[in-house]
Amino acid sequence: MNNGNKIRMGKDAEDALEVLRHSASHLLAQAVLELFPGTQAGIGPAVENGFYYDFLRGQPFSIQDLEAIENKMRELAAENIPIEKVRLPKDEAIRLFAEKGQTLKVELIQEKAGDEVSSFRQGNFIDFCLGPHVASTGTVQHFKLLSVSGAYWKGDEKGQQLQRIYGTAFFTKQELDDHLQLLEEAKKRDHRRLGPELDLFSFNEDLGAGLVLWHPK
Image (cartoon, rainbow, N blue to C red; front, side, top):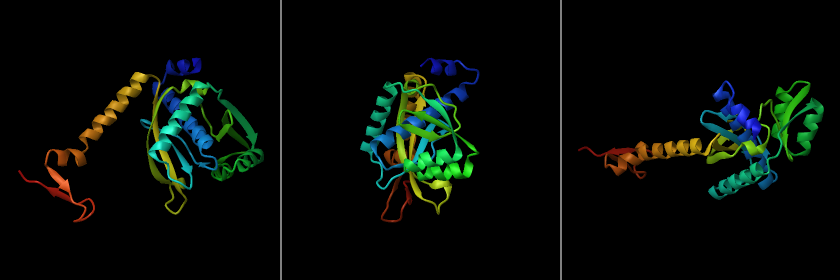
């Protein structure tokens, strides 16, 4: 936890938050792989307002799955597992991820890694990654999984179809609560909901998907 405090007090708060969220994405991946053996991990960066991780899995993730994953993330955070940087020769790293059945990672290492591969390990989970990360899973305390969507491997529409789990994370519960409140208010302002509720317009799928029927006053 002290490492998280040092990051929080660092010169660049945006960089600090990016490190926290990148670490949250690894926590997400660890939870998914422990709950759903056989799942393959793609990539998991921090992004504006949060983070995501892509997964290759035969079945779609459900709302109930997201709840279970988030609960598992909290368990792993409570364990305060050290996050350690590991450097491996390229052939050894390829062999390690191949043994774990992580063929997407093998592909990334083959394409992007140099002679020495940088990875980060937390418990039984290891990921091909340059970092940096927080010192332990216990630093990642205030997070929320938000949604699941489809994604293509490497952004190629001819590639494999993955599932992308989005989430967000902050240093404090208040920051997280404030952000979730903003998201909720944005949903309420969504024109697809406000229009029909205010009788400004409606949608009729029988006439065509997405066709808007305006209600003149």
